[in-house]
Length: 461
Image (cartoon, helix red, strand yellow):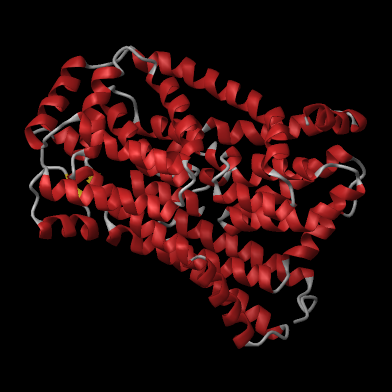
């Protein structure tokens, strides 16, 4: 297959019009399914005129979809688990005991620290947000903290997983693409991660003090009474989340881990909470709705079930199809080559690496291309400039990987919206780690002298 059949002009047309389709769907409140579907048809029509057969293009799409079948399974399992953990009393128990033990704390600051630590063990931002994140959102409402601010805090902590967790799929994809080793890469990442983490922590500590003053104790007590009346609550219910955390720490893969949480919650719903089998199945497929004596608590205990994931899976299928066409036809490479052809310094190369990774994540609505293409295509350039592969891995992780939840059209943001009901337009201003990380990386690249940058790596390892 000749990947030079497509002129640069056509490559830019596909990318720009696809972005217009996606943004238009957001502005006019249409489903993103239509935006990606239009983008795929546009790409196919252009590529066919440039010599690709329809069979070739469909094979690219099918290959990409087959590689992502685990993602679709994961979405179904997570949607089911959220409903089950509510009906089984696990999430209500987290809220109940959380009210008791987190009184007087700086809740936002504690949330950032807790989610960042747990995310490293879980190894997935999605897994962190959909489990401990949901419980913390419920707790935060009881403490009078706006949900969009709290969600931004949770996202900042959760996406630490995709930067440094040894069991993170995205980090391992970054390492594989750049041919870097985990141990050396983590040491290099600390150069930017430590200041990023400290600055983010300071931000949440300061605004957390404001919201810590407004705790309504009577409202919290009403929540606890409503939970007690509607569920059998015991500290033993927390053993299942602890088991899931232990499985993650042991390195057990995410699918069997979440399946364990789903099956455990299913049994608890039947045997402890005495919910009918058919009602448990209904909550899995169509979602769970709280029926306590507190209207406010019922707004917290809501999940969409598997049906709520149908649109998300269609959107992700559109993302994967478009990404497969862009990568399979090779239209991205000439653009990247054009950007780095005039690089005159190490700092400029690092800066452009972050820029390329970020743009690819923004345009393709997923981190995958923003990781794979810079990792594969820029590694040779880094070797030419005598920059270690770990710096390439760090730059990609600090930019294209971490900014993903900030764009409303990104797969990450869509997933978060389905779980929480909160759009990126509202939580993004408070997901400060996702902003600070690329800024720190660019500042590091700009202010370090060429020899000093290389010496920095030697001193770290």
